[in-house]
Image 1 (tube, rainbow, N blue to C red):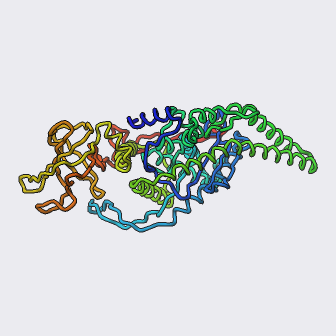
Image 2: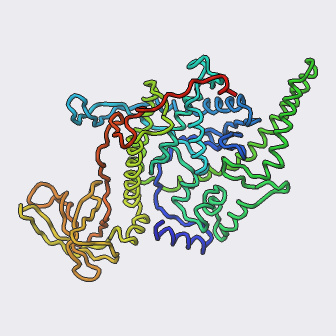
Image 3: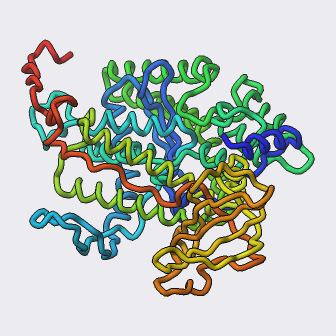
Length: 526
């Protein structure tokens, strides 16, 4: 965390209001995001209890699992979830644009430009908190290997159609969420805490209600008191006024309301199954319907406040203009979405449970590169973020006081720029610095400190091909410029071998030496 963020937290504690840590929005927000508010059963990992899902603020779809331990009811929930999510994803898969992309020609092993399809836009999923992202990944992992009756008629517990496909998409969204700067799957708490600093800890910021209490605190009120009420406030029945932002539930809700309601539902199902005539069955069916309605009302009472909070968070984020470079990161998300769409359409198998050595190394390198690129782009887009880098000695800004023409041995222009600055950058001999010039990075090198607060730099590139620098390529006297010690674009790392060429020191090629699994017997099936 930068010094600017620490100062913002102190200011928030002093004023009782969240303080901005950004002047622009550093994540792309879709015009039509899909909001998902999941709810899980306590004590059973990954057992869904219900969810609110939809793209319309006023009309979400409520999904409920009346008995989370019932396999059929859980499959029915996943089928309904697939019916809500997959059409939304498919709506972006067909609208494409043609663009050129550099690819390696296998015949010549050279980079050539080819015309390929790129989806014009991509879907965006928004969940309340970081735990919601992990739940999406868990759902994807538990669904993508399921076999349907059409795929395998002899499978003992066939999954409903489209459930494995939804698992593959949720896995892709969950994996993409681990790439810094990606916006395919976002947590509202992470979005808000990136753009505002509160007077509470980062762990407390994962409670969406408490975080919004700081952001929405009216003038003259205390965000700390509002956050305390959001976390601890209860009604006359002992239930939280602002339920947790999912997927976990409150123990008081589980013990006092949910458990008795599920017990009544189980008894109603048992009585209906034991009914001996049509008249008795009609009465038991009405009893079961009433129990189901009660469970639906309970789940909605826990998820609807969080649903409304997510949309209020979107309203707050939309007050900030989108950062100029957020569109570039969204384009990379579109490439990712298009690539997975093509893999699914080509009939490729689902993502493996465990990556091979080369794939894992590629993922790690990609995430490290994207993190460095995100840090640089946020600083270039936002003066407030750049101020944090300047305080850390990673950038300097100041006024140009003198420009001296100079040339190298090949008679190429290398002018000297004298800059007066109050910053204290970590400069050493021949250290390179960069500034943004027409969207590209212009490089200079540190020459010397002329006096305290005065730095001399030598320009190295982006001045044209002539003997004299192009107009506008050299800062003028009196101009205020900002130089960074970090590069604006990240370089690619060394090329890794193909997965089929994985060396023996890293396990060999995928599948090499792997033992065949034992044959499934009747004893293996419960």
